[in-house]
Image (cartoon, rainbow, N blue to C red; front, side, top):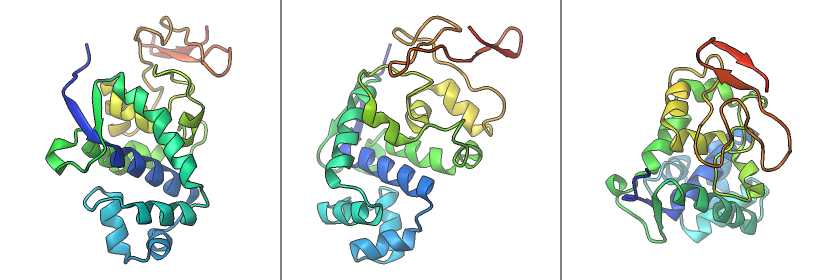
Length: 204
């Protein structure tokens, strides 16, 4: 059963999207700061949720990453139901740091040992941009962005925190498939999963 008392700000999802895209494209924080007309430390505070993400900052960040603001907002629109299904309620106004249950998880993901391992591996990490194609709020190992799985799945989060070594855990929940057989909503193919009893991967 999901905890329905988890609150978060919509700006946290915007921060999540910007930071994941910026890091995977290798865009320096200084470039982001210049685009929004702020100092690097000011952008860092925005990206870490310590200062509000204003509309001006969002448009400037989009310009720095060569994205349309509508793309980011559509991405957030696709991500929101996934977190809603995990018990999150999103506020359009800023929350105090201690009230936002999602922000600490987002920040922890980017500082985790596993993120350093995964960020440059296109075969192990799924970009936040993949959520643009999401059609259901269900979590699927083949298509759900890695950062969303990190925030929503405790076993997967522990795997990333431990350095993302070996095979990642596969979520077993309604809609995500039977053990060992997980069908992507985007591609009708079977996913390599993990058999904990044998400690070896297997293909269904």
